Image 1 (spheres, helix red, strand yellow):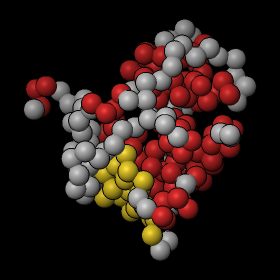
Image 2 (cartoon, one colour):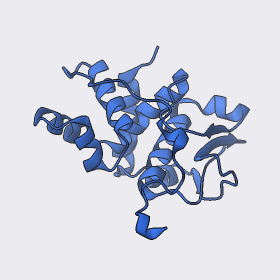
Image 3 (cartoon, one colour):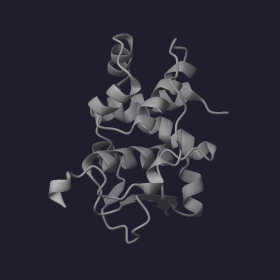
Image 4 (tube, helix red, strand yellow):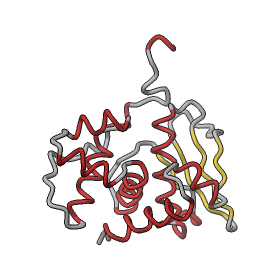
Length: 183
């Protein structure tokens, strides 16, 4: 069973410990190597741990907001699934894919790193839609839906407006979000 409060507390503790909400700064402060050298065109990111060395490999052409989400997601694997990663790399072909508990936990962790709880709650109480919150934070709507669901599980009286689409990133290329003028 997923322990939503534990996931939130772990993310909150790391942000307080390192005085930042930037997942890349957190990872670097923890000694996790981040490299934009992932050779596969199909993979967005990968986390691995071998002989106590931890690393996040990223597709070299990720847009800033996609990169941030992937690093936060991989940090979730570092915090909750390191033993599994020692058996082999955890590869991300798509983000927010909820086919197993580990992927959901990593996504929930990422939602707490990327989306400030107080700000998210403030926007919800002011009537902002999930789409508006996602646009303001420059994240995919599914990250907001996960955050809202996790807050609900922790006891906040919120209605989750729909379900997440676990396959939305399968069709996204690393240059997702770039202005057509920049191509």
